[in-house]
Image (cartoon, rainbow, N blue to C red; front, side, top):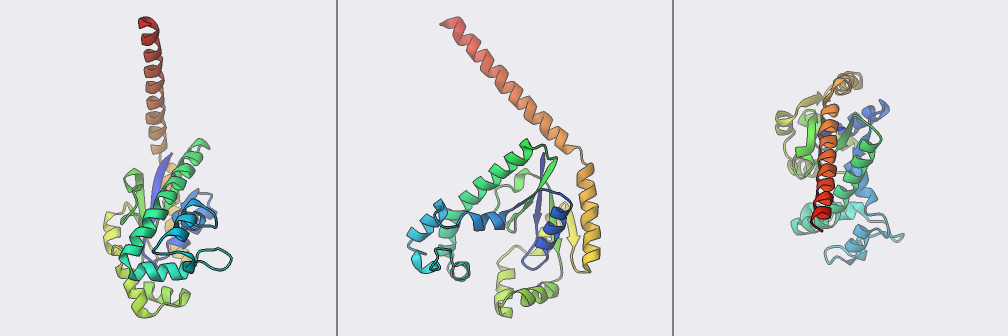
Length: 233
């Protein structure tokens, strides 16, 4: 099985692309969804945030759920709080993503999509991605979409866009670019083309061969060590 990174910038339509791929039967590991899962009440990260001097009970609703809007506002304006949040949450997200990757590999999937908003900025999984797909659109389209789906002011929107690596730079680094400026039909045609090319790839056989070779080597090494110790004892 090989890994395919999927990323973009806020408002470019990455989630739309992810949903279309999911409808085609492609396994998706969604970093944002996992980020929500790891802070549900009574999880390890939830407890650490409750006890953190940067956050604490004031950043939680009465039912115990994390107040995501309040946290987002705080970390956007407070770099130290952002570092503290990431130090607590990111290790949990990484471990869960790795668990899901292993589970999908054991189920025999040829590839899996890693839907990671900050793949280029922060993800340690980037070097393990065989391909990276970047979803792009114009700055005007980004702003239009974010105004429609959020309550952010234009100043907030521009600040959030500026906080990420420019989508033009991500597109330069990408293996595959999906232009999401047009209609949904146009975007779906591009997604289907990407899907067919990934389905046709035989790279997963190389990955499996390397993995099996490694396992065989370890088994032979272990067997050799056992035989050696039996000989000297």
